[in-house]
Length: 187
Ligand code: ATP
Image (tube, rainbow, N blue to C red; front, side, top):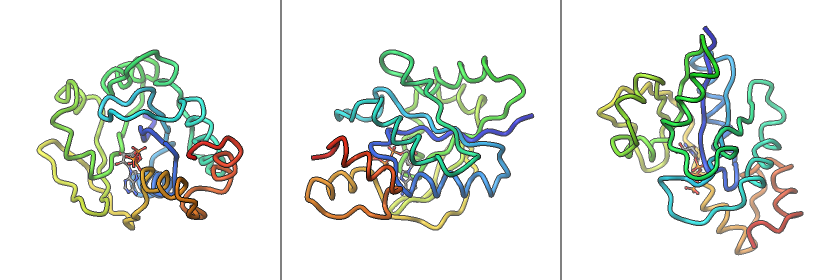
């Protein structure tokens, strides 16, 4: 059986927090690969997001130096809203003999009870929870806890810094910073 970690997100933009949690979970659980899945229209967030093509491109740059990390465009190729359950059903159909580990930050763990078809989802994937500043991994559903060095970086804070002309150096990988500047993404 292949062991695959999944990190779904808006990645608006992808940052060091995403890379660190993905690598820590991969190494801790001995996973074969981590697939980064940028969302099309995030069902749990109401705000407007950067074009999916730009977000996917930034993810591609962010993960380029880690041979275990792959971009999976499944949600951006599917028109409209994708719920995690739809994505997982499709991934399971397309990838037999694979165990999936769905990585989520503690801020998301709190919302698990609200996810569409959560009961079925917990049978199709193993959830892996990582701590995030201000949140603890607490859940009524089974969640594997992986201890990470908590890192207080978020896409929201990075967008705000960029809007205010504050440096984001080392918070996003260098090629992502270059892409953001070239495309004037968060001005
Ligand atoms: P935003 O600030 O726009 O809400 P975000 O920084 O939370 O974005 P997402 O792309 O929404 O980034 O996150 C994808 C996944 O990564 C989520 O499960 C989220 O909890 C987790 N995550 C993001 N940043 C961190 C972090 N610094 N520590 C732990 N988990 C994180």
